[in-house]
Amino acid sequence: MDPALRDAIDGRTVQELTYGETVDCDLMLMLDVACLAHLPRYLPQITAARRGIVLRPGETVPQVDADLDLSGVLWLPTGDAAREVLADDPQKTVWRGDWREDGAGGNLSALQQLLDAPDRAGVVK
Image (cartoon, rainbow, N blue to C red; front, side, top):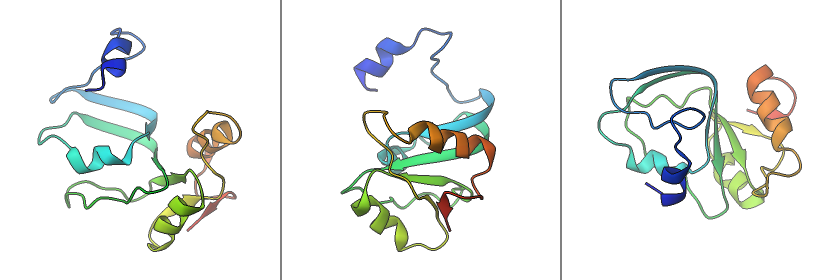
């Protein structure tokens, strides 16, 4: 685990989830697509109303276990190169804006779309 993330775990606002735990949430946002390629065998049960995954230039979408359901995920590209990777798969729902690494710009708009209605304006199927 990244040391900065481990340091952020305070048990209240940031918690480490382990196998056997169950979590329900409005939004699950994966900031590093590489996590999909290195999933542990046993995972906590997470039920999220909306899910988003950030994809950066140079990254690809890894092959994932058939049991991992990525349908309904809103993909958040950080630029044109990432958008081109996602354009090859018409099954993916892609946000039209650019996810900004510095948190500026449209990130709040993207998160609001994830929470409100990812199938409306602002996304491309």
